[in-house]
Image: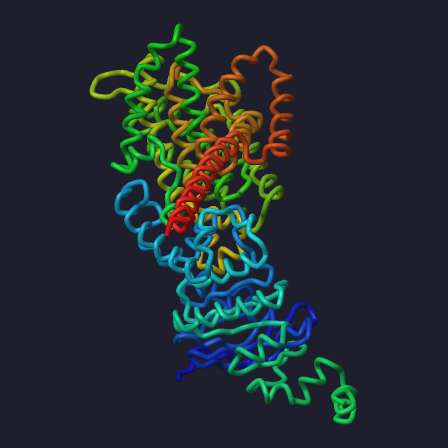
Length: 266
Length: 348
């Protein structure tokens, strides 16, 4: 396994709040990494820094031989880092298929203004892309809804669609921001099954932020724990579960005492 | 899966399947006898004016309807196009075939200028910034003697092609028609391609668009520049039309409201909608010219009413008709298939 992304000393503050404080982070190719932490611990900020939506104050993000810290989001995206959003942010007035076609925007070979001048070539290229996208829709089980407007989909379907749009970008790293939020337990299991299927099919490296700890514990190879913008722990799910600092962050100092934990356990 | 991949097919779609340009050639042929159906010169003038408005509204639809950038500067760019063509024709005796491309290029440069504020401003704030620009251009024209100031600039020569002069309304129609059809075709082809999808993505959600690899600034600017090219073309065509005279009154904020009405009424983000809007509004505005002041009131009310009760405009209604029709057809087909399957099972 090779290292695919390496973050060193990443800092970002908003006014006096350190949303990311000296975070070091590295990821192996093919890994499934979970990121957890209490509300306001800086998980989303970390995501936004990695995908260029925020510019880091300090630190480097080495990916694919480039330091991508400070790159614009579209440039990072075109280099193979795809993400989904906690609030989905789908293109609601466009059809499901078109949402995916936006996803493969970077794979379009023809020039931005060439469409009116070479309609036949463009039609051929579009057809190939459309078929690829239908293939993805088939994998995530939305093929029957290809021409439905995204705003007419249910929350569960939209979560799938968000996944599909990210996959359409043919990414190397897929970052999922609370992919299962608002889903019923059955749907959560379905979604995670599809995520793992996609991972195997497209050879992805995954970063998952999730509040449903069951999801993280079951699917992730390693877990990083953030609190107050700092990384407080990292390791396998079992290591993290028993980590003193993690319990303290989630439940408070007193709860972290062994005695109290035993009391709770009994 | 075959069913969902098929768009509703009609005669036009079948023509387009043979070659994408074919429907436009057919449209050209069909529209050829139009001037002979009119009873007087004024009606042909009106048709020509509708042509200019179709180009103008289609351009605005690209930047506003598809890319979602609320600009009021479109009319200023239109004015710049018209006056560029006029100045080159009147003072430098340039032929139409040079003034038209020049007008488009100058307009595109100003399109970049109008587009820059869109990097930082959105919605109403962008509208205000571009409103300032539109007003400034109009005032500049009104006080500049070189541009004919408040009395307008006349003596713009009619286009000449191989010694043939397009100096009547009737002949001008035949000059206009290819330009109008090309403008519509260009918009269609462009907006159905990945560029059009990128525009819509920028409209729907810029952050999400950027995260999927769309260079938001580049596409915003591109939309402004393309729409400016449309405005420049419309301006030049207006300037060279008989009687070869343009006046600052053609380029006021009120004119902008009228063009906006065409796009909103026709359907934001719907090319046919803007064209239908341009035709309807130009005719209605002309029929009710006696009621000038009430006209503005009525236009304003129609805009508000459309936004409130028919947000996708006339084009949206037509779209919905076709979509629901194809949906019903697909549903019937599936029901039929299920029925035959069940029958088959029953027999087996």
